[in-house]
Image (cartoon, rainbow, N blue to C red):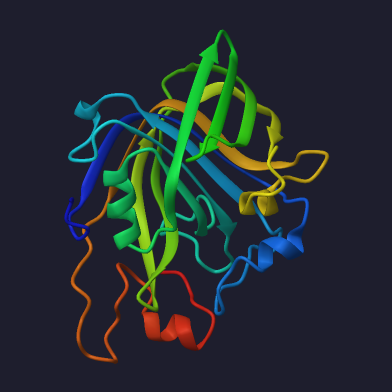
Length: 248
């Protein structure tokens, strides 16, 4: 088992990351714990990615992953490019990855993600551990050029009652053009269905890249003192429990 406190590096993952407005904003709000506020637009996000070879990671091996969640108010990362988010679902093909993520507070469960690019059409699918199709996305994509995106994504989890705020550094080579054409949630009986998009689809931000590199930062030991911060980065857990958290 990987040490959950150790950092991990992933390079050149094929990645689709974007956000939309949900069909049921009220249902989205109920997925947040007390003390966190949703983004004013009630944005929802998804990241579907595939790591094709074990040589692309420092310890995870090859795997696929989809995580979804609710974008937050007042929790932007240091560079402020995209809002911070609360993970509601985290579906990984690798047991090693699931154990590592669960120890950091992620709602890790079994799942499989596929990205199929044919010509200029990208089709992605996320399935639950039992094979149920949960998400299908189609997008029109172009080619990478000289542009690169870099910065941090901020995601929140809860572990042993403590709110954990983590900034994940990344570098991506996005394609252009990029347009999400459809987002389907064909399993109404599954909890992930609460995050389905509104009709018509309204995409807020996002990109597709055949090469995204990112890191899970090191997790420091949780201090023993009750007044010491127990999160990974900027937001003390005691403040997050007693009121609305703020960004860095």
